[in-house]
Length: 146
Image (tube, rainbow, N blue to C red; front, top):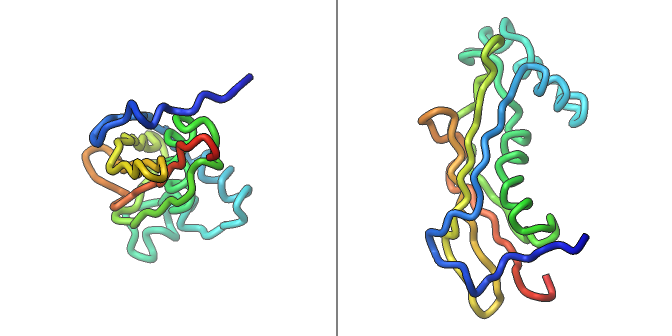
């Protein structure tokens, strides 16, 4: 099936190109720990997290960063089109043992480089009303060569 590339010429700064929410559970964290090899107990044990002064078990930062860019990858149609991705971690994602956590992502066009056909996509990543990733930005090559 051919991949559809977003039409660069149809984009404008401020356009919302993707929105998605991600539900995290303790099971999600254990699975990520196994896949990543990061078995730091602050990601699955409340007693350890509290002993080091944390409010509870935290999602892995790289897990949060990874799922935050997924709506952009889906929109772009090809992960290879994401040529740069950077975030600043501003607040941890605490995953409640019973309720889990739901993180929402809104991806908007922040800037367009017409000469290169590259869109800077700004991500707003929140847990409830709290921003968890600051200055989260992906640069996406939407040129024919992409």
